[in-house]
Length: 79
Image (tube, rainbow, N blue to C red; front, side):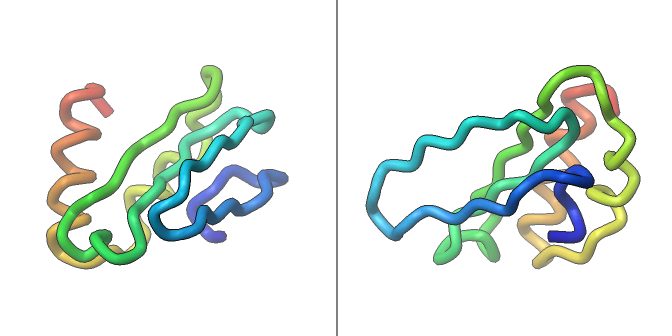
């Protein structure tokens, strides 16, 4: 909850089930696969142009492999 934009609602899917989520609050979101998050299975979703929570997302504590993958993603995005 600390790394989603202010006013956004946390979301969670069910294991091995499709998930559809509509993002209405601009900002940066990090999504991870529960069983594989520690192995680096993460995604970054940027909604709109508001990057005001980017520093909080980058400063959050993640498992090492997830942190490494997020670092790679942010570098690819030039962030």
